[in-house]
Amino acid sequence: MKPEVAKVVESELKRFAAELNLSDAQKTQLKTVLENAGERMDAIREKHLDVSKPEVMEKLKEVRSSLRGRVEKFFTPEQLAKWDSGVSKAKTFLGESIEA
Image 1 (cartoon, rainbow, N blue to C red):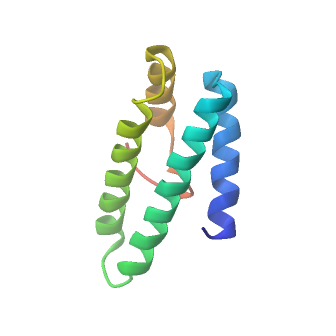
Image 2: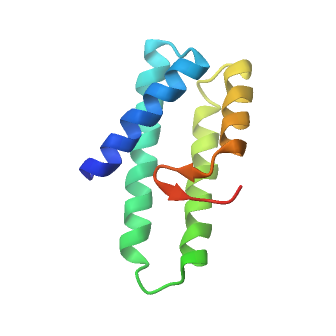
């Protein structure tokens, strides 16, 4: 993982851990999910240098959507509701501006 992505993952993990009151096990699981999403986003950016930004943004939305499916497996219903609320307000996702 690129150092800048690792930094963003760590920052997001701390923020989510505090807001969602995550257990240590959930923090570990979320860190893995965020790292995988960051790596997928790096790969998308690298593979699609010749496509338009809107096309890349659409692919990044797919990553964000799959991330939600993964957190559903270990978040409580209350945590998932807070997650959804936070994501709907977010203007960036792992360093990328994405429209909701």
